[in-house]
Length: 397
Image 1 (tube, rainbow, N blue to C red):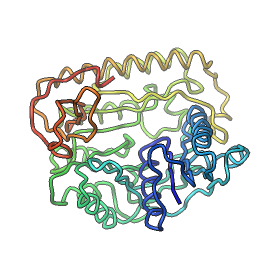
Image 2: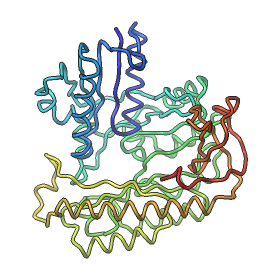
Image 3: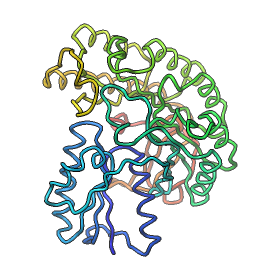
Image 4: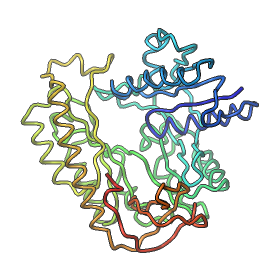
């Protein structure tokens, strides 16, 4: 049968979709080509916000419209949390709704330059606004030896960049008695010409030891993604986050002290219950003062089953949430432009990608995640090049 998988949400979902497709192909099925009608369509969903749920439903409608004779199967976090809501959709034939309790290996090899390698799943934190533990289950991971073997396999297939992914990857080792620093040391010991990026890591788990190791490692890129969620301590307590903003500042300052060129992306949420005007201004003052490179902005939405719904706190009107989102997006653009300009004349190492643009150029990323371009040269695809590259700021925004 011809299979199509549509993936929404995080890089972990993309890795799991890739693993699923590879399993189906190994069992004799085929990947449906572009524009070809599929026999089975699988939608791997996200449910991090109401907007994500809406996009899931839109994707289900679109996929059925484009593949009218296909059997529609829905899986992922939205399916785990709201199976009846999905099953009631006329387009859906089957919902895979059971949250997983064991670890399932996955990595995405659809792009032969990069590989998203799943190293951890689930979360034990139960923040008051979040449904992910309900959808993904408790924190779990494989043995380090298993991760290293899969990393070596991906590199042998041609990957030049590994991105370590999971729900809460800093919690790696909870189910095996190991630790995240043990994992990155083991991966760094692999021989070869490649680099590694660490995806989102909680600030309370991103230790100075990890930061210092990355700074002097063979393969790890000076690139961090750290969830802040709020820059006000009272709101962090409401959210049941496990750090203060001063600890967050310490992490950022330590990174910049040992890796001045490091790219630091920050997850920022706004509009949660209890985020009064005074707390919001305090949040803005804090985030503006940080030497970070980009903000990933999320607007809070009420999620059934979360503890925040039971809190007797001021509710922020939707229009005000949207205004706050615009402000954070503006701050993010300003920080990203400043970061790009600060490194415009640097000598960098670029990993060139395969896509050719309409105007005959190719793109790549530096070790510190700056997107650069040059005239297309097929011989450079999936290779590293050390050069001084001019930067078009518009590429970043």
